[in-house]
Image (tube, rainbow, N blue to C red; front, side):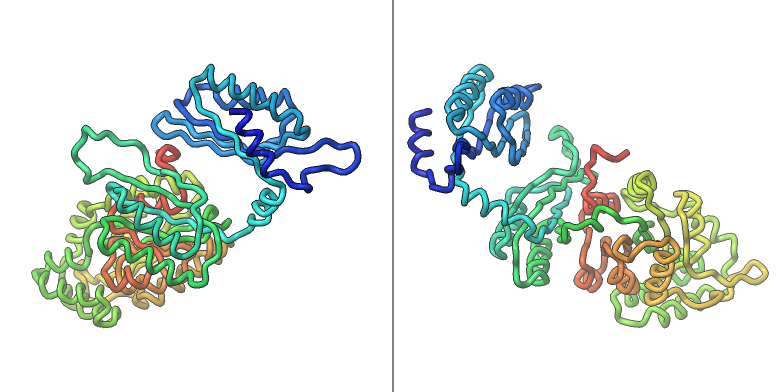
Length: 428
């Protein structure tokens, strides 16, 4: 093996290898180690290298189901040490029942690799209840077609048992780090999102920069986002006008009629409803899957958390108390003598107002819009989703999903943690 390697190394020799004066010839080797993982494997091999004064130019390691792949790019200052280094590494690998491979790297090849750093990096997050080889293949094909290279693939979700046949609450997520130049980022994003039309997965595309790991404020729409109902519809059922109001709500969420018009029309049908109904509905609000887990962990991470809702402050404040939120903005119902008047106090919180309030919140906290996250499901959420650093359409209507930069339709709200690069093992 050493003879074969020596021949291969000789074929790659270049005059640039030779140092001027009395300096020694340098050798650059790519060392790869594979086999069954065991405790202390990295320590064992690097100990051998340390005895020969070897410099490590790059290193990477992954373990999948106890199968180890360890790679190191080595600079051996004195080429005459190469044979001794390889001999000791081969002996150690034999002892540990591991496979090692050596590849010589020419100086010019190494310098080309160095100059390649600084290329744009992008994060592609693939998430769903389960991930198939087909899902991975579709993502990898698009990445390749647009001339990008996959640098890393990392599983963010935890392990799950195959003995449990219930996939309804299972979470699966893989994060791809890619790098390279592409002429049409928007087309790249659109083709990644197109995968979700046939595959039961969500795909998120983000530029890998400081802001992705440095968000500070998240705001949620309330109805059909933080809770799994439309409060207006629940009030309408109590008032006996459920079907009429539900039809108007659906039309508004699809963007077919202006939000303000639909809001006023729906609210007017509630005139005369007794105030006591509000508490009954508030006490039974169905919380969206993953909401508590997401908020609890974001609070641990120092986030400010709020609600920006076109719904009603009575219910938003109920959730504020339940989840210990920092801020709430919503419509205040007008109530006289214990009865709803069919109107609200002040201006209607519509889409434009939500965007304005988000800007004001960020300014008050002294943070940039790049550090904000907005989550919503309806057409009136699009303005705030558009200006937030991370705007997420959550189980949204088609028109919203098509126009938002990010969407989650397969998992609960805690799927947002994956978009932030948070692993399951890191959260409560």
